[in-house]
Image (cartoon, rainbow, N blue to C red; front, side, top):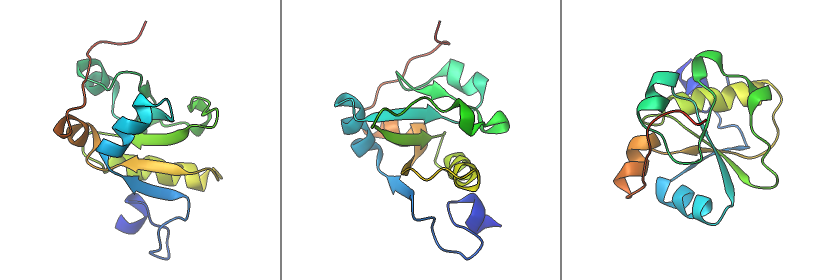
Length: 124
Protein backbone atom coordinates (compact mmCIF):
# COMPACT_ATOMS: atom_id res chain seq x y z
CA UNK A 1 0.00 0.00 0.00
CA UNK A 2 2.77 2.48 0.84
CA UNK A 3 4.37 1.87 -2.55
CA UNK A 4 1.14 2.93 -4.26
CA UNK A 5 0.77 6.03 -2.09
CA UNK A 6 4.28 7.29 -2.66
CA UNK A 7 4.49 6.97 -6.41
CA UNK A 8 4.79 3.29 -7.10
CA UNK A 9 2.36 0.82 -8.57
CA UNK A 10 1.37 -2.53 -7.14
CA UNK A 11 4.57 -4.06 -8.50
CA UNK A 12 6.69 -1.71 -6.39
CA UNK A 13 8.06 -0.07 -9.53
CA UNK A 14 7.77 3.68 -10.05
CA UNK A 15 5.27 4.71 -12.70
CA UNK A 16 7.31 5.59 -15.79
CA UNK A 17 5.75 9.03 -16.12
CA UNK A 18 6.06 10.11 -12.45
CA UNK A 19 9.25 11.92 -11.48
CA UNK A 20 10.45 13.57 -8.27
CA UNK A 21 12.07 16.96 -8.80
CA UNK A 22 13.80 19.37 -6.42
CA UNK A 23 12.13 22.65 -5.47
CA UNK A 24 15.09 24.61 -6.86
CA UNK A 25 14.47 23.14 -10.30
CA UNK A 26 10.73 23.86 -10.07
CA UNK A 27 11.59 27.44 -9.11
CA UNK A 28 13.65 27.77 -12.31
CA UNK A 29 10.89 26.21 -14.44
CA UNK A 30 8.27 28.60 -13.03
CA UNK A 31 10.51 31.64 -13.54
CA UNK A 32 10.97 30.59 -17.18
CA UNK A 33 7.24 29.90 -17.68
CA UNK A 34 7.98 26.21 -18.27
CA UNK A 35 5.70 24.67 -15.63
CA UNK A 36 2.17 24.67 -14.30
CA UNK A 37 1.97 24.11 -10.54
CA UNK A 38 -0.88 22.25 -8.83
CA UNK A 39 -1.22 22.47 -5.04
CA UNK A 40 -3.00 19.42 -3.57
CA UNK A 41 -3.14 20.71 0.01
CA UNK A 42 -6.50 21.60 1.54
CA UNK A 43 -8.27 24.95 1.10
CA UNK A 44 -7.32 26.25 4.57
CA UNK A 45 -3.64 25.44 3.97
CA UNK A 46 -3.69 27.12 0.57
CA UNK A 47 -5.41 30.25 1.95
CA UNK A 48 -2.84 30.55 4.73
CA UNK A 49 0.11 30.27 2.35
CA UNK A 50 0.72 29.17 -1.22
CA UNK A 51 3.19 29.53 -4.04
CA UNK A 52 2.25 32.38 -6.40
CA UNK A 53 0.55 31.03 -9.51
CA UNK A 54 -0.27 27.63 -7.99
CA UNK A 55 -3.66 26.15 -8.84
CA UNK A 56 -5.57 24.51 -5.98
CA UNK A 57 -6.89 20.95 -6.48
CA UNK A 58 -7.14 19.50 -2.92
CA UNK A 59 -6.32 15.83 -2.50
CA UNK A 60 -9.55 15.26 -0.52
CA UNK A 61 -11.56 16.09 -3.65
CA UNK A 62 -8.79 15.66 -6.24
CA UNK A 63 -10.19 15.59 -9.75
CA UNK A 64 -7.88 15.00 -12.71
CA UNK A 65 -10.45 16.77 -14.90
CA UNK A 66 -9.76 19.98 -12.94
CA UNK A 67 -6.10 20.16 -13.92
CA UNK A 68 -5.25 23.40 -15.67
CA UNK A 69 -4.17 23.07 -19.30
CA UNK A 70 -0.43 22.55 -19.45
CA UNK A 71 -0.02 24.08 -22.91
CA UNK A 72 3.28 22.25 -23.32
CA UNK A 73 4.53 23.16 -19.85
CA UNK A 74 5.65 20.63 -17.25
CA UNK A 75 2.97 19.50 -14.79
CA UNK A 76 4.26 19.87 -11.22
CA UNK A 77 2.26 18.69 -8.21
CA UNK A 78 3.11 19.74 -4.67
CA UNK A 79 1.77 19.56 -1.13
CA UNK A 80 3.19 20.50 2.29
CA UNK A 81 6.12 18.11 2.51
CA UNK A 82 5.90 15.77 -0.48
CA UNK A 83 3.63 12.87 0.54
CA UNK A 84 0.19 13.90 -0.68
CA UNK A 85 1.48 14.84 -4.11
CA UNK A 86 2.47 11.18 -4.55
CA UNK A 87 -1.11 10.12 -3.93
CA UNK A 88 -2.37 12.72 -6.41
CA UNK A 89 0.15 11.54 -9.01
CA UNK A 90 -1.03 7.97 -8.62
CA UNK A 91 -4.65 9.07 -9.01
CA UNK A 92 -3.65 10.70 -12.28
CA UNK A 93 -1.90 7.53 -13.45
CA UNK A 94 -4.88 5.38 -12.40
CA UNK A 95 -7.17 7.75 -14.32
CA UNK A 96 -5.12 7.16 -17.46
CA UNK A 97 -3.01 10.32 -17.48
CA UNK A 98 -0.03 9.58 -19.73
CA UNK A 99 1.82 12.89 -19.63
CA UNK A 100 4.86 13.53 -17.46
CA UNK A 101 4.05 14.21 -13.79
CA UNK A 102 6.61 15.95 -11.60
CA UNK A 103 6.30 15.72 -7.80
CA UNK A 104 8.07 18.53 -5.99
CA UNK A 105 10.34 17.04 -3.34
CA UNK A 106 9.76 18.62 0.07
CA UNK A 107 6.55 20.39 -0.96
CA UNK A 108 6.02 23.99 0.09
CA UNK A 109 8.52 23.45 2.91
CA UNK A 110 11.17 22.55 0.34
CA UNK A 111 10.12 25.54 -1.76
CA UNK A 112 10.67 27.92 1.15
CA UNK A 113 13.99 26.24 1.98
CA UNK A 114 15.35 27.28 -1.44
CA UNK A 115 14.14 30.86 -1.00
CA UNK A 116 10.83 30.51 -2.81
CA UNK A 117 8.22 33.12 -1.95
CA UNK A 118 4.67 32.48 -0.81
CA UNK A 119 1.50 34.54 -0.63
CA UNK A 120 -1.65 34.23 1.46
CA UNK A 121 -5.35 34.47 0.64
CA UNK A 122 -7.44 33.00 -2.12
CA UNK A 123 -7.19 34.09 -5.76
CA UNK A 124 -10.06 36.27 -6.92
